[in-house]
Every structure is written in C-alpha cells, then in structure tokens.
Length: 375
Image (cartoon, rainbow, N blue to C red):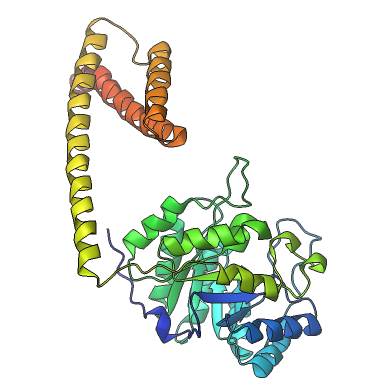
C-alpha cells in the first residue's frame, strides 16, 4: 500500500555541491570552539551540504552528558555565519522546536527514541504546524515499520512537506559487528510504501565504529538512498559522546572519495534491454516458485487431514530437523547462504503448521459452535 504523503523533493530544500549528499558534524556540541572549528574543516572539504550537531541529547541513563542545551544554538548560529553551511539539530519537545526555529536552525530531525512514542511525535508535529521547515524522521529504536510510518504521517499532516526519513538501524538482542542492526529490509519496505520519500542513511549509529562507516555508506547508496548523515569531530578521541563512531573531517573526505556512485536508472537502451531480459527470466522463475509452493501446501493439507484422522500431533520435531539439515546442506551446495535458507524454511514451516492447525481445529470449532447454539 502506497503512503499518501504530500512531500517536496530533497533538492528543493537542501543543496549539494557534490555527490552524495552529506550532512555531517559532531555527535554533540561541546564547546563553541570545538563546534566552529569542526564546521570550518567540514566546510573546507567541499563535500558537506549541512552541519549537524546534538544540542539536546536523550541518554539511556541519567548522569550521562545530555547535551549542552540552548546555549549551543548560539554556537550553531556562529558556525553557520562563518561557513555558510545550513544547520540541523534533533528536537524532542515542543520547546526544542520553538528554540531551534528562533535560533534560525535550518533543518530539524526527530530522533529514534522520539519516533517510538506517538505522543512525543504529535507534540513535535503540533509545534511545527504552520511552519515551513525541513524535518527528517529517524526510524524507531525497535524494528517497527508502523511506528516509523506513523511518525512521518503525523509530521506531514502538520503541513510539513519538506520531509525525509533517516535510516539509523534498529536495536537487536543479537550480538553483531554493528551497534544497531541495519535491517535493510525495513528500510526497503518504507521506500516501497513511499517511493518519493527521500531517505538518508546514518552509518555512524548503525556501525558504532568508524572503521565500518564506509562499508555501510556504500551499501546505503547502492540501495538508492539519497544521502548520508555522518558524525564528524575535530578530534574524536576526546569527544564527550560516541567517540568511537565519529571521524575527523579529513577521514570523512577519504570515506566519501572511496564511494562508488551508481544511478538508479540509465538511458542506455542496450543496458535497459538486457535488464528487461534478465528480469523476465526472474519473473518466470518466481511464478514457478509460487506455483510449486501452492502445490506443496495442497500436500500439507492432505498431511493435516491424515494426522487428524489418525490422532497424530501436528509438530514432528524429528521431521523438522531432517528437513532443516537436508535442505540447508543442499542449498549450501547450490551456493545459497545458510541464513537465507533457514529463514525461508522457517517461513514455509510456519505456514505449514498454520494450515495443519486450521484443519485440526476446524471440526472442533464447529462442534463448539453447535453446542452454544443448542445450549
């Protein structure tokens, strides 16, 4: 289902002198000198389109640095005056919105913790009503596409048409190389729901590690995201917050220079014809896969009826283990990843269990209804 968002293209509210679009700056504004000096270096790279800085920092636990506060907005004004870079800050309350706009901040963003709370988002949206300012909305902390969409809709309903999404990864209980799991499928799903909505990637928060920023940035651009938000500090080793995920302005240039820029479309007829041919092959295979899956489920229904007639439990753990082991080994021999194969098999198995459960409970539900009718 496509989202009915009234939005303007990214190019109408942020200009870039080079590709890709980059919004950069320190995780936190710490001192005026630190912020202005960093802004100078970023502006001199010629690679940065806007300066970001954390003014109010929502921290997980009390006692941690929660941002310099409103005084940092004055530092941002000075940084903008001396560099010409537009400025961007996170807002989490109506008061933040009011103060940021009064200070002339050019772009606002809603953070992951705020996106997770519809009350907070609505408060921000109400404060934005009647204001013409670009707003970017980060995905919620947890992998919940509806919350992300809801936050975007609330901001858009307030009259904000200069709107973008920020993909910053999601919290996960599983340990990995990333601070926040990218879960690219959720970002792709949002792009599918809202094809015209600009999406910016935040590799700093996804990785939590400056050494992986280039890798995630390339992946994001390959998935047709319109830009990057990267945390950059004049000296990350002494940063007050998130030191490990910040890069120097010089390192930022290296990252950007090594990115390969690919276009989503081409006017080369020969290339388009080849893509069409290959996609037609995929379409035929997909149709065959779906057809075979339907045939498989018909057999599953027969099995469900047989188990019901012979009073056999739905789940047979030994059989499931056998399927998982055999199919995984077979898929590995065919160069399919184990992770993909296991997810696919689990999805098929879940549907098989659902169908058999429906068959098992069908008569029982009817008998229960009859008893209620004649009670």
